[in-house]
Structure formats: structure tokens, C-alpha cells
Length: 185
Image 1 (cartoon, rainbow, N blue to C red):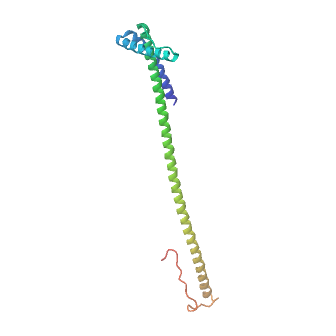
Image 2: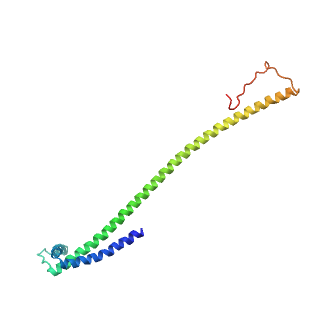
């Protein structure tokens, strides 16, 4: 950012000697001198016409500038126009750069927001999947606990019968229960 500002200051500073060069070239080269005279006479005519209209005078024939004054005025006009064009181009370039930076920043924020939304969606799906697995595991644990209680009763009965503490019940009196062991079909 500061490099660009220093660069623009450098360009504007270099534009002033170029403007002075325009002034000296206007005095030395005949075609450029004619061009400066035409520019100066046109701007003088426009300026005087506008002054007369704004001040309420009637429009009269406007006397042209003498050549020395026209060359000086035209060279000043062209040099000032050059400095103005350089300054305007620097401002436009800075405006374009800041707009591009803002656009890139908006794109980055939009991309980051979209990325966060996708991550949020993925995390929500994972959370729901984890809840479902948790419910399944709780149901399975409950079934295993019930099977464990049932197996403990059978083991207690087997131990009681084998130690002679209890008589064996016949299968006709009690229907045997078929239990499912986990992992065995």
C-alpha cells in the first residue's frame, strides 16, 4: 500500500520536469509552437466568451493573443494538462486497485463462509450418525445385559443341580429358552 503511494508521488514528481520540458520544446520546435499557439488561442477565445456571458456583457470580437504570449499560455496549458492527466491516472489506478482488493477480499470471505457452511453440514451429519450409532450400541448393550442375566440364572441352576442343592427340573415342566449369543447366528 505505501509502496504504491510512494510510486504515485514519484510519478507526479517526475511529471513536473516533463511539463517544464513541454514549455521549452514549445519555444524551440516550429510545429509544436504552432500547436501551442492554436491551443492557446482556442482556450483564450473560450475563456473570454464564457467570461462575457457570465458577467452579462454582449459578445464582441475577441482579440487574439500575440505569439509570445500564446506560446507561453499554450505551453502552460499543455504542461498543466499533462500534470493533471498523470494525477488523474494515478487516482484512477489507485481506485481500480482498491476496488480489486475489496473484490478479492469479498471473494475470500464468501469462499471462507461457504467452506464453513460445508463443514457445519458435515459435522451435523456426523453428529446425527454418531447419535444413531449410540442408540444402536445402547440397544445392543441392553440386550447383552438381558442375555447375561439369563445366562447367570442358567449357570446358577446348573451349579445348584450339580452340587445337589436343587433337583433338576424337567424340560416338560419348563420350556427351554433358546438364547442368541452375540456374534453367533
